[in-house]
Image 1 (cartoon, one colour):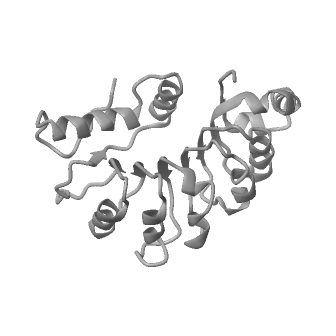
Image 2 (cartoon, rainbow, N blue to C red):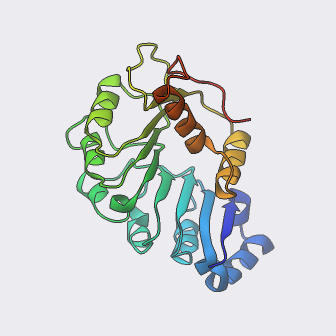
Length: 224
């Protein structure tokens, strides 16, 4: 299968020739698309239209969208989806235990449905293939500690914009500074083109710690 990547921004969603052309092409090329990054804001119907035409996605990043439940039927029809970065503000505990979430190896959480362990974060410990987890907003270390302890295959956990200096002593935990839109976009492009993105960079940090090459647990420097 030929690999295609799509990066779409809000200007494509207006009633413009660009959007109309994209909409016309999607049914014929969508099944070739394996990677999508979208910044859709409130355009939920356009997002559903786009994703329904791309059933062979492997990685999906959605910015500007904190609610995922309306996309669940479409995501469930993506058997190859293993990397997801999206908001989960409206997702219930049991909804996180089914496909496509049970197939994920890499999960980036932009927002979440609650702050408690029971009924919320505990659901992540039941994802059988999850090896990489990123949380993009401050989260209490008690939750972090339980995730590190109870997620059975977790190899890398990234906390972004987390300023707690009492970091947990766990080689898998990497704390990074938040980055601007341009940086995040470039990082995504590098990852989809086989380069060293944030996921791989943090893997190298964890490897360095396990090999006793590294002394610290908090990093602000990313791979360029």
